[in-house]
Each structure stands twice: as C-alpha cells, then as structure tokens.
Amino acid sequence: MNSGSTVLTVLRQARDLLVSAKTPSIISAISSLKEQSSGRMRDLAYLAVMETIMLGGAEATISVLAQPEDQANALRMIDATIKRMTSTLH
Image (cartoon, rainbow, N blue to C red; front, side):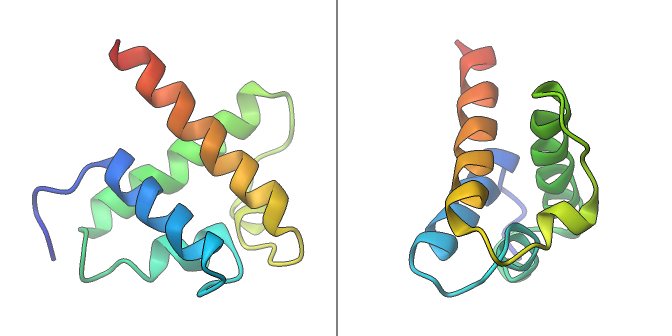
C-alpha cells in the first residue's frame, strides 16, 4: 500500500484500468488498487465519483458504480470527477 496516494491518483489509476479493459466497472477498478492505496483513499474515490453523479442530478449508489455494461459512461463519470476535483485545486 502506498500511503502517499491521493484520491486523484486513485481515480487516474482506476481510469487507466477501465481504458485497458482490465476491469469492467468503476467499483472493480478502484477496488483492485489495494496494493497502491489505502482503504480510506479508495472509499474517498468512490464517494467523489458518487458526488459527481449527484451533482449531475442522477441517483448515485454503489450499484451504479458496479455496472459493467457501459464502459463509456464509466469513463465519463471518472473523467468528470477528475475534472471537478482538479478545477477546485486551481
């Protein structure tokens, strides 16, 4: 586990896993990063994506993050979350 990881790092790594088709959903991508990040950072990454979904006016649940059938939508959600988080840093 890398104690220096951040939520943005977790999201970027999860995105890479989705793009490479190594995992079928957001939740599986983030969950698979056990060696790279703490449970707390992974939990915060789930919550960050769920917050982005809610800000868009949709219902946000863990089951939404677990849906494997729409990779393009999963990438949009992660990209929107990364964009939202980085925009608040600048």
